[in-house]
Amino acid sequence: MSRPADREPRRLTRWWRRRSLRTRLTVIAATAIAVSVFLAFQVAIELLDWELRHTTEDQLRADSRVLATNAERTGLAQVQLPPYSGSGRLVRVILPDGSTRTPVGQPALPPVSEHAGRVAQGASADLLESTDSDDDFLIYTLRAGDGAVQVAGVADESQTDQLGLGMLLIGLFCVVGGALVGRAVARTGLAPIDRLAAAAVRVAHTLDLDADIPDEGGGEIRQLIGSINDMLAALRDSRQAQRLLAEDAAHELKTPLTSLRLNIELLIRLDRRGTLDSGLPSESRTRLLNDLGAQVIELSTLAAELTDLARGDVSDESTELIDLADVVVAAATQAGSRAPDIEIALDVTSVWVSGRPAALQRAVLNLIDNAGKWSPADQPVQVRLRTEGASAVLEVDDAGPGIDAADVPRVFDRFYRAESARALPGSGLGLSIVQRVVDAHGGRATVARSPRGGALLRVDLPAASIARLTAGEDTAVR
Image 1 (cartoon, rainbow, N blue to C red):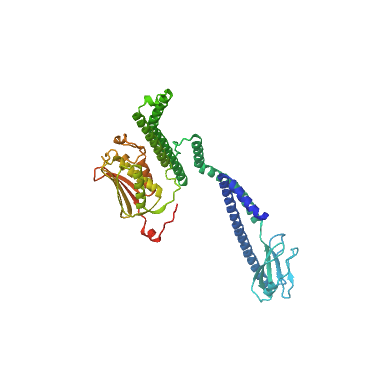
Image 2: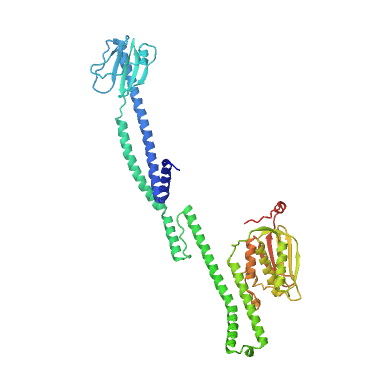
């Protein structure tokens, strides 16, 4: 249980954190000036005190020498003491027997101290001492003849008081002025932040990501505005990409959905008339049902690819140290089961990489499926995996017509399909997914012409280092 004394600093801290930045800057400026004025006041007072004391001491020494000279010439008992004027210095003569003489009407001085008595006896040199009385006398004792003379004075504190009052007034003025200046500086310095906040609020309310925030100010302000503009640009690109994905998806879905709707409407119309068997020959009905099945498969494939593509790099799959040869073999087996009439020739060697097995298998499967669409029935799809330097190189080629030079730059674009591929099944997303998976693994995907005249798609992935293989790092990491 915290004590009340512990709660006060916490309460003060919470109060301070709730203040605006302007208020903080104003308080800091006023406090800094107040501390500076206080320190300057203390230094000035100390210097003035030292100067006044030094001046008083010099005056006492000079007066003591004059009185001592007169006392030695006329004697301590006969020396004429200056009359007391009601203020100023006080004098006293210490006779050899220890008694003292003072001017008539002069206020009494403190008793002769032991050290002053030794000076009068010649046992010690001249002496300057201060008393602890309310008047705080400074007494200078100087040996003269068989005794000593003393001259006492009080330091004039009126100048110190006047200086203190002046410094106090100046300090208050400086604190108030510092607070006003701090407020003005805070308002001027934070003006770009205010405009930045207003622009951010406007963007949040209007959802207008095209309104860049004007670049103003310098240093950290300019860096902050630049970062926010970069963020807005990234959001614009993301929204544009989402819009394009939605538009392209709607365009790609339109054709199979239209065909599917027309075929279903035909079946429904014939069924309502009761002429399904007579109005649609068996051969036509079989072809229609096959078309329906193909269209449903095409829609399912497109929906799955859209879902996978829309997820981007977000995946719950962990990164593992895997043998890419196992992934390639599994993908080839899956491709063979989906298209039994496609022959796949494997030439793979063991290459270890760090990656997500399911994502990599999906990418390899898409490469093989793409090659299978173009490879002639009597020509196999060749899949090769090897190590080349510090990279794992995967090549998939077919003996088809190849890719036109005009289509090469857009092969990996979403929904892009060459003119020659429009009649073939597919969504135009397969190679785009390949590109995304390869990029997520720090690799590179390229396209070239195969020695057999078809397309050669190549994927380069960073191979796992020998140190990791030696250490046996096979645990999954995020």
